[in-house]
Image 1: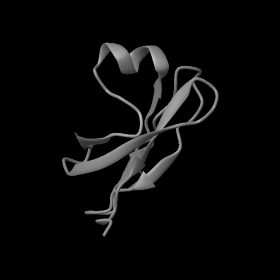
Image 2: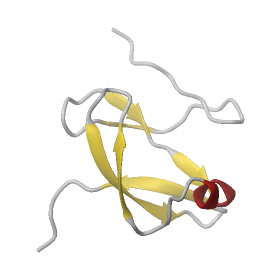
Image 3: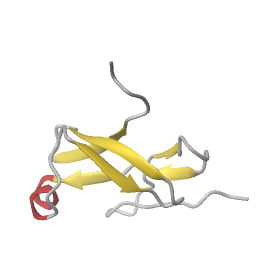
Length: 79
């Protein structure tokens, strides 16, 4: 089966990564700065999302330098 294909606001394919739980292909989401304030999401803070495959994922938003923030998955526990 062919994995789904997601496109960004310019019609270009979004980068993808496998879900750590099931291995399904999910898109790497990017957030513009203006959206973060209106949705009460803040950079460098642990957040929990339910991905398109239905599994819960913990992520941290990291600045990319062009006014956008990328989701970086948290795969383990820091000690």
